[in-house]
Length: 265
Length: 248
Image (tube, rainbow over all chains, first blue to last red; front, side, top):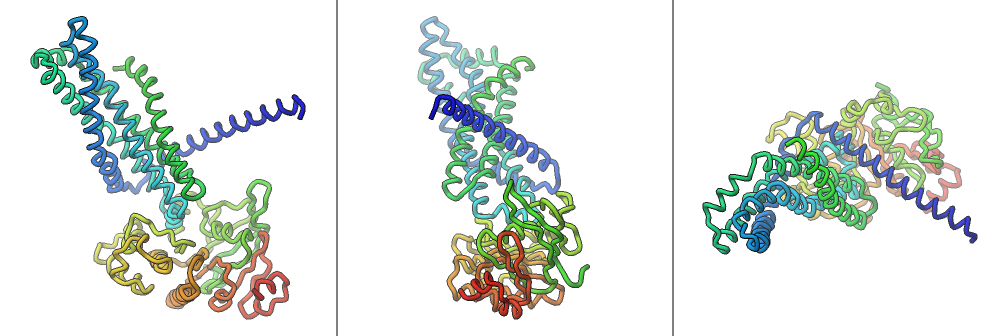
């Protein structure tokens, strides 16, 4: 094969990949538009939304409990080690609490939900697709996006701020335990510094982020479920993609959201 | 409403890219009869069925179901219209998170104002008519045999009293005895509802069951209808492809 042919084949391969990504983006946008459209169309199946909130919210509480408690405790310990050197260890409280409310609570809750619920969404919907259960819904005249995707997306969007709130409280508890009980920082000083520096807008920032992450995790999880092809192997691939893209999206969007919210809050 | 046909295809063409899946089909499916669409794999049978339900749009031509040009309906009208259909899928497609009872109750809860007692009476009646016991009604699909899943699928398909019942390879994966039990059930269901113009359309490979249970046979090959005949005439067909199928 001559050099020209090799170059042409490389360019063709690259072109195919680019077109594939553009097509995928188009599919994803189309899917997002459909779910938005069907969110506002009756019938409103509130019981399905509650079922999803119980699955994503209630059943994630224990994992959030563990993650947040230890995150708060470890973060307090690390900050203490740094701050002690400049005699500023009384600032542990506000630093940990601000970090938790603005960043750690929404991002780590998002990662937990992306791993646990994004995978479940893709696996449930994907296995329904390969066993024709989605076709069965459509034949009955039920829109599968409205029945399967909308409750999961809204469920994630509403559950994640609640989980993030729990993360913040338990994380604060963990840091308080380490700061006050283990490292012997004066309790009044600890809480006083928090109230000096904390603003309601910081909590709001975290909750807004959590809601956006929930929405994105829901969209990505359900999209990969609906796009499963083949059998069990396809379901596995879809589940894997949902988790990977869910987590990446949380981290990337966090950067842009932080920049945006810093200007308006 | 057309007295003769429940479903009519007029110049139906379906292409996916360059390949033609359905090639200029014009024929009707008789109202109140059992019609089986027969043919080799890749003949276009399933695509034809999807056109009947409006799950795919024709490239050319029209599909008329119960006097409605189904390919001209909007999304919401189409969803409403699909309540005229019941369908039994190849592997039943029962919702795996619901029990047999809940599967059959599902369309009633979604589309009717029936109270729980009325739903219970109707569901248990339907399950009894397909030979599903009260114990099996409480089981999840994963706890049922293939034949039982098909029966529950049939009961679910009948829940909204459809005008047209579609069966996609209803006996695929079943042993010969269960195959005939399922076919008997399909025929009994048809006879019970025949008085209201109930039409059964079966997609199948099974020539022997087709000859025994159908009123009409549509034989497809490479996206075309080779023959559309009543069973007795079909048996005498001299078409070499059909002879090949008959002599299996």
